[in-house]
Amino acid sequence: MNTNTKSEANTYIANNVRYDSMTYKRTGKSGILLPAISLGLWHNFGFVDDINNGRDILRTAFDLGITHIDLANNYGPPPGSAEENFGTILKQDFKPYRDELFIATKAGYGMWSGPYGDFGSRKYLISSLDQSLKRMGLDYVDVFYHHRPDPDTPLEETMGALADIVRQGKALYAGISNYGPEDTQKAAELLKELNVPFILNQARYSMFDRWVEDGLLETLKDNGVGCIAFSPLAQGMLTDKYLNGIPKNSRAGNDSVFLNAEIVSDNIEKIKKLNAIASNREQKLSQMAIAWILRQPQVASVLVGASSSNQLKENVKALDCLDFSEDELQLIDEIIK
Ligand SMILES: NC(=O)c1ccc[n+]([C@@H]2O[C@H](COP(=O)([O-])OP(=O)(O)OC[C@H]3O[C@@H](n4cnc5c(N)ncnc54)[C@H](OP(=O)(O)O)[C@@H]3O)[C@@H](O)[C@H]2O)c1
Image 1 (cartoon, rainbow, N blue to C red):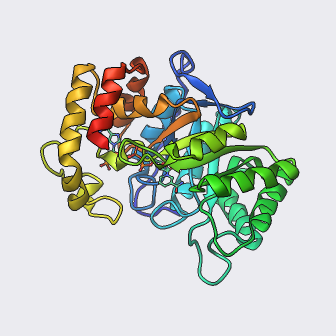
Image 2 (image 1 turned 90 degrees about the vertical axis):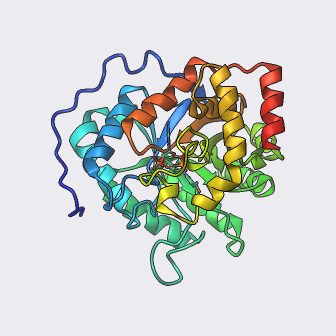
């Protein structure tokens, strides 16, 4: 229970033109259409954060046609608190809209002590999803992911657990995350044998991290599976936020292992050059960074994070200018190589 901030809900009525301007893309060869931009709750939704800001971001997202919300068991901090806060907001604001939402959660990183709260055993995945459903107050999630490959558990066991979760109706679709091309191929074959709808691999992809272009997108295409790209803004570096130093109130300003002053400083020259290209396109750098990912047909959705609803509004405007000239693409390649 969040004791840090009081949740103050006034009645929410969703924007009635919310589906007019969002683009929806098919994920792989499935029946599911995802918004080209989805919202992730890794940061800004834990008990340490202001739940009313979280509520504002979620309302803004839904009003913009963002139907897909991404969570994981360990999001917070503390772990589990993002799901719990999301559950509170869901109950107060989005209950009438449950069937308009596509909600994801995951298990695969360390969640509780002892040998059964980490990696990829059947024991971990099934009990973790039961906990997640309770925290969110849901009967089922739309997609459940194995969060990262487990080198020690047979893939048959992990995929078997995903299959049973889907058969039990606790998730409608199965997904994997952070799996490379080879493991993705094996997972796809196993899930096909098990007759389980496998629709997404969630993978890090941005101008600063292009690993998915080395075989993963091709493997996903061969198997009719979609890609959803996480950390598309390299956690905020691919925006105009760090052009003039590191604001205190920013992810790098909080000095995490994932993003800190040193990482920003290593990339700042590239960021400035990319920002100049974005300006020539009459676009913000954040918008160009998102559009650049959406040029890949296998990417069903770009999964952004936001610490304010204004950031999300800015990011969604990426959809107003998605095309790149060959010259622009080449210039970008030269900067980020
Ligand atoms: N499967 C996995 O292993 C995995 C791993 C990581 C993430 N994910 C998923 O992907 C989601 C997105 O990841 P991410 O949060 O790293 O994505 P991101 O979009 O690259 O970074 C989001 C952060 O960038 C800053 N930002 C966003 N828009 C901005 C704008 N217009 N102007 C200035 N700053 C802006 C904000 O940080 P400030 O606090 O600095 O404002 C925001 O929290 C996560 O929430 C999670 O759902 C999955």
